[in-house]
Length: 447
Image (cartoon, rainbow, N blue to C red; front, top):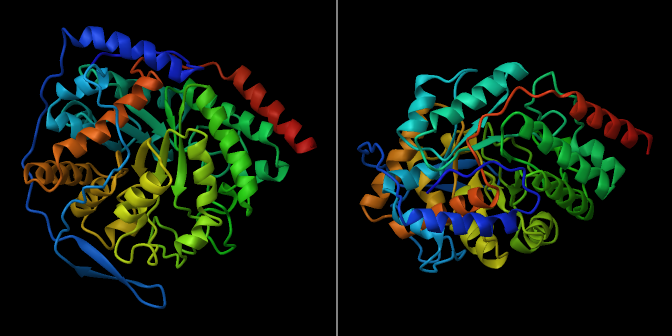
C-alpha cells in the first residue's frame, strides 16, 4: 500500500475512485513488509454477566463461545482487482491486527511506548485526550512527531480526538470555544448544527487530526444521566436526528472522519460507563421507538463510522454489553440496520469493561461480534494484552484470518476514502477560524 497525498476533500467518494486506481497500478510493483510479533499467553475463559432485578452486575465464567459464522455480517468488496483486497493480501497477520487498534498515549511528547506501538505494533490510529494537550504549539508538535514515527509504515494513522464542543473539547486555550450540543439544540436549526460541524472539523484539521468522535446521537431521555446531559442535542428523537446528521455532514465536508456515538444509545443510563457498567432494561421494540432512531437515520445518510457503547441491555443480550455482543453489533447494527461501515468500540479500558471482563477476552468477543477498531485509551500494557489476545485467537482458530481481513478492508477503505495522510502540519494561524467561531456563536445567541 502507498502513502496518500493529503487533500482537504469535499467529495470523498469521487476521490476514492482515483485513489483506488493509483493503488492498483503501484501495488503491482510493491508490497508490505513484516512486523514484530510477540508470543501470547493462554486466555482466561470468557466472562459473562448475570443481571439481578435491581440492575446490579455479577461476573460468572463460562467456556469461550465458538465464532458465529454470521458475525460481522457486513459484506466487503471481493473483486479480484480491488486494490484494498490486494493490499491486504500483502500484509502480515501482525500488520493487519495492528490496523484494528486505536490507542492512547501518555504525556505531551512522544515517548518510547508510543513509538513502539507505532513502529513495532503498526497500530492503525492514535487518540489524544486533554492530558496530552497543553497548548497549540505542543499539540501540533506531538501530532507531527506521532505521524513521523509512522514514516516507515505505508498505511497512515488515524489521528483522532473527541472534539464535541462544550465540556468535551480537547483543543487548547488558543482556540475560540464552541458551545455544547445542548446549546445548539436550543436553536433547533439544522444549518446552525452543520456550521458547528464544519467549525469543529476545521479546528482539528488545523491541528493535524483526521478523525473526530462526534456527533453524539444519544437522546437525553434520563435527567439522572451523569455522562450525557448537554452533550446531547435534546430529549426528542426528531431534534437529535435533524441536528446530529447536519453536524455529521458538516464534519465530513471538511475531510474529517465523523464517528457517530454511542450506539445503541447512552441517553437513558444512570451510571457513567467510565466507572461502571450501565444497565438499560429496554426491549428491542422500545429501543426501536427512541434510542435507535438517530442511528438508523445516520446510517441512511451514509455514516462512515460508529462507536459502540459499554452498556448492558439484558433483554437483548443478558451476558454481554453492546460493545461485545454479536446480538447487538452483528445482528442488529450490521444485520437489521444494514450498517456496512467501520465499527469502533468505546475505550476498552473503561470501568464498564475492566471491572467485569478479562480484557483479552473482551477484545476477542468484540471482534467476533463485528467490531473493526478496538479503542485502548490507557496504558501500553493494555495495548499489549489486546494485541497478543487477538494474535493468539487467530493462531488457535478461534477467529479466522478472513474475519480479520473483513475489518482491515473496511479500515483501509475508509482511510482511502478520506485520503488520510501522515503529512506534517504547520502551527496554524487561528485568527480567521476564531473569528468565524465567534461570529457563528454570536449569531446563534441572537436567534
